[in-house]
Image (cartoon, rainbow, N blue to C red; front, top):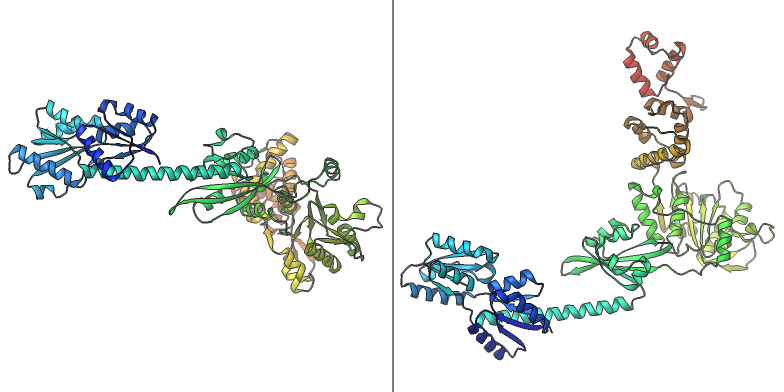
Length: 631
């Protein structure tokens, strides 16, 4: 255990301490009477001689606490000791109801609430927090009629200078015994803490995983060697920094859920450089309080490595995934839950099903999952089943040994071995292809054509669907067993109309891109942005990107007007209705058509058009703006 040093202001107190140490059979090697002016020096000297805890009192304890970081067990005057001093003070003054002051540090004294009643005196405490306040406290006590002062050495000297009688604040064996027992408990606690730290350090040093300890405010406090290697930085550079700055891909909301106690553990995936890493976070609990968290970082493994020739061949054939969860497309607030799910699902090798309307970026999302998974080093192969016959599906997915083309001979399932196969529009699978895919997923084996010759597969399947597969199962159009295999790790990407913030982000990103591409620097005012935000965008990101390029190429003014955006939307995407015969017709607002005809009739003269309508030109302009009529 940590050694204890006892430093006291008087020899009489030291003798009491020796007696207690002998009675309690304590092993305390350093006992010394010290001067207040030397208290810091003596404490540091005791530490150099092996002491880990200091027992001291009053001003001396205060100086040691202020100017060192050495643990202190302070001697507190007990009620019994203070009672004896009050009795002596009353006898010294020789008065029936004297006024006595107790001056010193607050933490030196026990409760004195009933002393006035017990001893028939007026007892006033004057507490201070710094020794520099002692002179003021003594002066205030004297001005308020104090006849005798009880305090330590400094207070006694100040009282003597001002001609007021004083008693030294003697401690008895009881208060010294209590302080020594506190010091012993502190020593035991410190030893236990050292043992725990040593055990933890051994765990850190011998762990294959990277271990990072963070505080409750997410600052890194401990990093082991494997974590240094993963982060490619030394511990002295990492410690003290916010973990979310060091690992930008790490979700702050995920850490908050652990540090707040909402989750016992949480796992996710991030990329450190080009390495996909699984991070598992668990809280550190001290009784009922969470004081930080431990992050365990493990490289994702489980698939054979691709050699250089295979990697080059994959690149040349386009079997690469370029998107990452850190890309701007993934940064919108409505996408955060999807991204968090994607990072977690990347840990699994089971199939993933992504729902979403056309144009919502399902393929990009699948690429992100691939790049955060153990399959990152393998190929990323995409097969879109839309418009394929059964024969084409079978050949593209499962291969045809008689085909001349190497890709068709092997099939996508074989080519994507050790990687990821993205099957787009999986709802279009024919019954036979559904059965073959079920077998491939269920038994991790590939059957080509009707032969029972199989190839063992080690890849991950990601499927996307425009519609709800459960409805197709109910209608008998999709195998139930395949549906249950796919419908476990499910992600639903919300349409753009539900992501208003994303619309604004995409518009601003496009504005910068087209400014560089076409040297056109256009301004989008708030009312124009509101038109873009409130439009439904049935084609989602694809439609919006295409529309924005047309808008930036053709806008007649540097400030894009609300009316021009409305008219362009109406031109490119007219609303379609059906007449009484069920025929599809293009709908145009009658009032908008009337305004357009008048402006054409008067060659764009708003004043003449307004005159015919019997309205002001200002009212005409407002209607044109509302209906998207230009002229």
